[in-house]
Image (cartoon, rainbow over all chains, first blue to last red; front, side, top):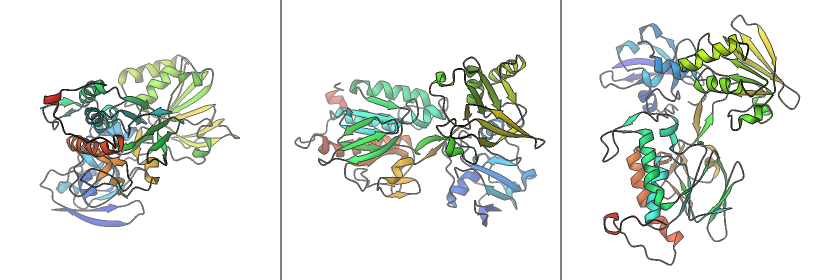
Length: 106
Length: 334
């Protein structure tokens, strides 16, 4: 299991614990935790409706792929450590990180 | 006024297939979709992605599935209103409905089927003060008719393919095109990006990079757009139009106000026939929810078949429904 913190649109923080051996994505865990993440395309990095900003722990994560960066580019607003939650795997690398929900869609 | 038996809101795969199920029961369909083409998210978001869980197709590209569905429903001559959003629903004294779109198209139908997927794909809007004030008065999110911009000054904002493509196209039509992009480079199609840089070098478009939209100005109609660049300097551009192109995002839209039971952006239905709480209104596909719901195209197809059989009684109240197989009866076109 891995533990990390999620900050919602109102700034409320909650620690989340998720299994890191099931090949889940951060988007799937956010949805399962009842956060209002649309994830329209279901995790193909094609819609940018699971936009998050990594507030802490960004150096640990794998780099965004071109497809992911292309999608972030279409948003009206994004940040240097913006990610699409569907492209972030739940792995020990996430331990201790802080993730903020972003985007008007979420 | 368009008159039909069944009005289907949403022309994605489930909406399209429901035409087939209705057609077998001799019910005619009219479909309305806010996107300019049929296919819903399959055509709009991932046309070239393979899908592996359509029964009978080990692998099929999303657009290919849409094309096949269009072929399959051809015998039943469905009619379409595309690029319009259903805004209003009015119940008639005989139980039927009249729906009205944002462009005032009206459809009279005995039964309404909401196959709206995740909702209406609406343009993402930049966070700017007074944006809504200038919508339709200089700010537009779609280029419906390029002639609107002939000999006008146009500012485009965005860095994706559509921003690049429209900058290139409108450079031939508009008096002046300015493309504003927040980065130094474009991630869109390299050919289009190269073309945009060429046009900028030739002085045919103004390219402003590393800049963000900051403020809109105008008395009634938009006439200035203020930008801020990396060094926090402000640039004011005189313009007739601003077209922000930041992609589309799904919203439930006016459906939310129709008195249906809605749970987390989905319409609650009775799984016996996928009816909503309102008589003669059904909801199928990704837009509905019920215990055990799976958002799969194949589940939507199943829902369409059951739902159309249930709706038969409203279209042919005096007839008895007899269930028939296509293998026995074939497909009898209208």
